[in-house]
Amino acid sequence: MIIKISPDKERANSILQMVGLREKFLKDSEKIAVNSTIIAENYYEIIKELCVAIGFIEGYKSIGENAHKEIIDFIKKYDEFDELEIEIIQDLRIKRNKSSYEGKPIEEVYLENRKQDLANIIEKLKILLQKLLG
Image (cartoon, rainbow, N blue to C red; front, side):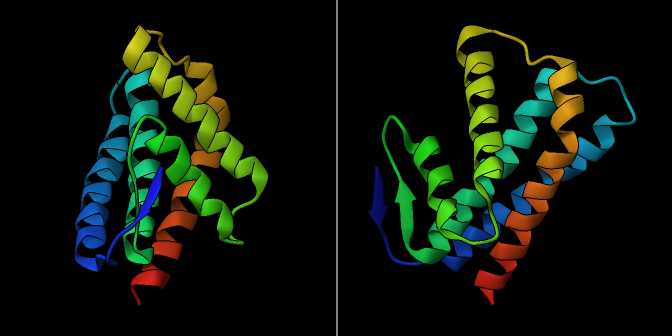
């Protein structure tokens, strides 16, 4: 469920700083052999947190059982994102959940096939977030 809250730019900025740390990890992970599941989970966390930050700026927060799905669906309202990008994010969310809750690994081939799409989505989210922060 998405609920209305007071817009919170400070919290969005804090999340943006954490996103920077996760991105640094992803860049560093390319230099060493890091498990594809851990890398994919970090892509997911970056995307989810950017969506959460956008929600905070707009004065919304997701809570409850489907919170992550709903906050990702929330960004559909922005013209910057097409349906395929939302589907890619939701697919990553499902894979991450299976990894976290069922111990199912995320295959390296998935990451190889989606890495550029995920990087593009992250960049679009960051640009949108910066625009909203003013």
